[in-house]
Every structure is written in C-alpha cells, then in structure tokens.
Length: 308
Image (tube, rainbow, N blue to C red):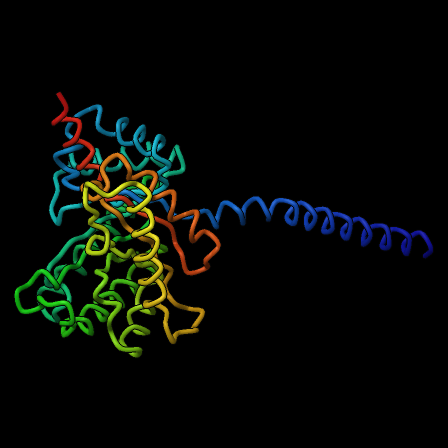
C-alpha cells in the first residue's frame, strides 16, 4: 500500500515537473516571438506580375531587392485569368520569398467593386480564385488579400469631399473579409486620404471593415524638388500625423484597423528609404501604426532602365 502511494505521488510530481518545464520554455521563448510579431510592416507593390515573372531572373531579383530594402511583405498583382505557366511562376516566387520570411499578398484591383451586383461579384470571384490557388499550392500559399479598389477614379466620385461611394466600398471590404478570414488569410485595403474626412459613424465603419488599411499618402507628399531633405521630412511628419489623428478622432474601439503609410518613388526619388525610416522612428510605439509601404517595385525597374 505504501509502495503504491509512493509511486502515485512520484508520478504526479514528475508530471508537474514536466508541465513546469514546458511552461518555463514557453515563457522564455514568448518575448522573442512577441517582438517579431510586433515588427512594423514594410510592404512593396509589384504590378504586372505575369509579364515581370517571364524572366528567369525576376524572382531572385525581387528577393534580393526586398532583402536590401528591408521589405518583409509584397503585394503581387494577380490577374483574374492566368495560364498554368503563370501559376507555376507565382508559386515558385512565393516559395522563394517564404524562405526569406517575406510574406506575399495577392493584389486585386478594381474601380467599381464598391457597387453591388456584377462588379462586386467579379471581385469576390477573384478572391475565390486566390483561395483555390492556395488549396492547390498548400506549401506555396498566398498569406493575404490586398485590395486596391478605387471608386474615386470614376468621374461621378471626383471631388475632395465626395464620399457617396464609401458605404458601398465598406460593404465590399466586409464581404471580402468574411472570405479571407474563413481561409486564414489577412486582409489589407488601400485607401485614399479623403476617406478620412468621413463623419464619425462612417469612419468607424471603415476602420472596422478591414483589420489592416494602407493610407496612400500621395496627395500630401508631393514635395517640390527644390525642397531640402529636412523640409521634405518635416512636411511628411506633419501630414502623416495629421491624417493619423484624423483617422481615429473620436474613436476608442480596440477592434479598429491598424494603418500603414504608403509613399511612392516619384515623390522622393533617392530619399525614399530615408523617409520610410522616419515613419518607423516617429510611429513605431503607436499601437495604431502598422508600418510603411513603398510604391512600387516597377518604378525602380523603370529607373534602372532609364539610367545611362
């Protein structure tokens, strides 16, 4: 009897010791994992992927560029219809980038997917094609969906305060979010700065529709070439802070989108990396700040082609 009690007590103690050891290992590892999870997003748009990837050197060149410019995710344009060869090249690029811990989001574009009916259905079908791609390539999957929906490009939506299209755009984001989250994908959507002029209920709806938003800071970031780097930096800090404040003004809901700030090559030229680094320095501690994104990889190719 005493022997049985001893064995049971020893077994219980041994199980507790194993549990304590596992807990200690997890607790020691957690800070490093948490730190990696909180690293800011550094994104890059890549357009015309089908044509770009025809070159055998395209995928290694993209990876090399990302590594050199601290890019940790790309937004790869994907056509609604693509060949089997295109599919293979995309899968190979994803595999290559994943080896370097670079995420890949499928970039889907539209000018009218905010409208209910055929236009929105077309976009949702496009999303479904990405999900099908992932099912066929379980080890070379897209990590997320990235939406580039631009109803502001249509003539009836022009004007700095014209937001008649915004409710429809929000409805589209929500519809895509249902599909992406069900498939375990992140969702990000590019937004124009004028959307932040919406009233409080509409801004709350916008910032609740997608967990990630990317603010295209083009309108506020078109510095004169005669301006010094310091002047351009000061203007960027002022405009980005103003727009971030505008986005969350009056909103305290914890389940709101985090915002990345996008800059483009034509606005800053060789100063672009410095401007992007300044965004991290200014907002890294801001829980609403997602990171930065640069537009675009294709611009860098044009610069190289134009060089003497």
